Amino acid sequence: MSERIIPVVAERHSLPLPPVNSSLALTPAQPDGHGRLLRDLRISVTDRCNFRCSYCMPKEVFHKDYPYLPHGDLLSFEEITRTAQAFVALGVRKIRLTGGEPLLRKNIEVLIAQLAALRTPEGVPLDLTLTTNGSLLARKAGALKEAGLQRITVSLDGLDDAVFRQMNDVDFPVAEVLSGIEAAQAAGLTGIKVNMVVKRGTNEDQIVPMARHFKGTGVTLRFIEYMDVGATNGWRMDEVLPSAQVIERLRAEFPLVALASSAPGETAQRWGYADAQGAWDASQGEVGVISSVTQAFCGDCNRARLSTEGQLYLCLFASQGYDLRSLIRGSLSDTELRQQIAAIWRARQDRYSELRSQLPPDSATSPARKRVEMSYIGG
Ligand code: SAM
Ligand code: SF4
Ligand code: SF4
Image 1: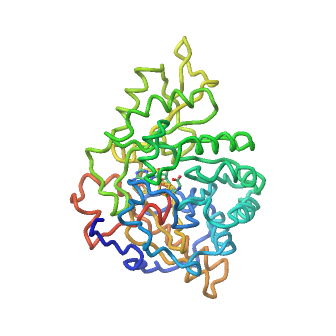
Image 2: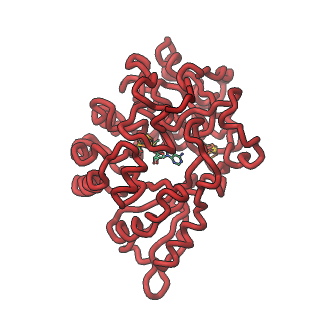
Image 3: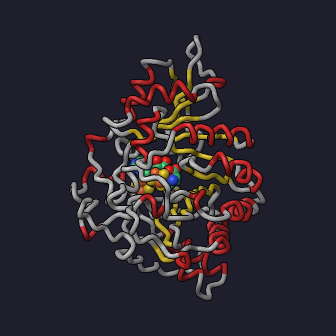
């Protein structure tokens, strides 16, 4: 076993909270330091996972003695819902539950029901979704839908059983994830997406079979560039397969047409399967690519991330967050909580992906700037 000791938990220090300007209006349109509006909140509900994807929770770091968060450090469902409500008042319209593996959090459907009951200031329900590795989906899809979940994203890195078992590194069979996706469809979850992280030399041969499998099924497949998140996955640029090459490989097999982005801040570039006339055949669906490495999309990044223990991160590549849990567990009123979150968002300057090429190559692992792990703040 490797000698790498990475005490991700012990190294967390929170950022100082920016001062609150209580005369500023708390409207659902809060621009940050680059004019980006707060729209999307990702909530990590557990830092644990039953997979050990090497790009996220490599086995040698996340071993059986890894110091996961004790239960009392986790935000309770009531604390999460109260915080989410504050974010919704400030403009959030979409909430994604993530982790770790969110379906491992006990009674997750109770939280889903609480979040599904939230309304925007205009009285509209939120766009509520969840990202899962799919391992427990066959069992839970019905209860999730019943609790009010609308959409779901399943991560799946290959169709070939051997490749998939190697990617999840716990010998989990692909057939069970595929059954989970079918169960989600049967339960009536719509807008199902499948995310595949592409690692050059590991699962690139799965790109075309995955596209062929999901074409025309109503499931949207998206290819994600392997990212330099966290400090433990040993990321190397030569293992990134640029999205442009993914599209090239797909176009060699299927006629594709570029589609417009579906929403501001949309991270995926969309491509539709074309008919004989070269027009999009919506019945065959679409694929997407998320080029987080080769094409920065910080310009309209409208996402905030709430960690399992209530730290607020404003960028996937941040090394520190803001300690909202202390505020929530203190004596703050709901209005004061909103004011503090608004002040944090207004001070936001993050645009890591745009700056990546100018950073020193060791910036992920330098002790001065140890980035937070993906499994702690979610994707
Ligand atoms: N366990 C759930 C899952 O795998 O869907 C939710 C959490 S996981 C951290 C969220 C997403 O992040 C997954 O789609 C995963 O593939 C992606 N991810 C994790 N590490 C990544 C990396 N280094 N590069 C690109 N995507 C990554
Ligand atoms: Fe677990 Fe998801 Fe990370 Fe894989 S990507 S190790 S399934 S949290
Ligand atoms: Fe948003 Fe940070 Fe990613 Fe840029 S690098 S798109 S600011 S999360």
